[in-house]
Length: 398
Image (tube, rainbow, N blue to C red):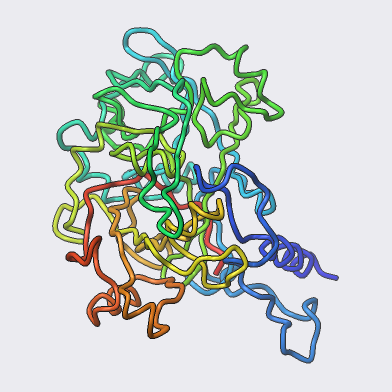
């Protein structure tokens, strides 16, 4: 068996496990369940030849073609565990406190390619108000942040509503809360003036303390709720991923911040008040820093339902809501890690007539809105609800 065939076989075996990547309050546990919620079926189904006869995926020849592709190359993705392991960086505040952070996206194309980051040119237009912090590069390659800190001590909590309307929740509390100036975005003023997406993972804690969690059992009272393990002595941190779709392709992404306590609590992300300065509702317009993410409220429910999707489903069965992302690298030119939440509600007519199903791509959703099958909350106009989430893309399955 060739090396390529072995790799393909292992990949199919891994993605066959992908179904319900734990995300925030939706699910506290990994690994994935094994019911193939977002996993593409192996190509050998219905064929007269075994899986081992198939050649490499087209994406191995050209990344834009169909097949698996790791987008955030700086990280090592574990498909079975649903995690990504990234370089862990130590910086500091101007006032001296230690800042532990990761780097995921940048508007510097050259450095994105060199470091395996996502190239996100739209970040250039995020530099308004408090949305982008200032940083300077000091001696020893230390990034010094001018302002913006995070309190990781709150205990994350989400209490679902009563069945069948589990959303909206009765109460919620994000597990980490930034001060008024915190944003994951930082502009390094003395080293090119580029913007980096650099979420804070831990704050004002020493390396010796964090090294106790090199083998897991992360203490989320002192670090981000997405942390599975953290190890300064090895220079890395392992973070939990979330499953979703982009233009009908199953993807994995990392949720780290939101501009409001509600999506922050639901996603297991940090409430970042600085992101309140991001202008929403103008996706793809001139100078817009965002892309749209499509979140369904009342999609089909049932843990074993192959069409399950949405917030009601996620809050009832503790699995991902399977959100739909807009453009991502390799299949679109307008990627941004800043996602403008568009909240959709299936109408009663859609439910009664059997139109409601799982949706997986932007134009499918917009068509259903145009035809009147999906509306905004309480039958209102469909569109942005004023929430932005920082969700860098990590992996594309197809």
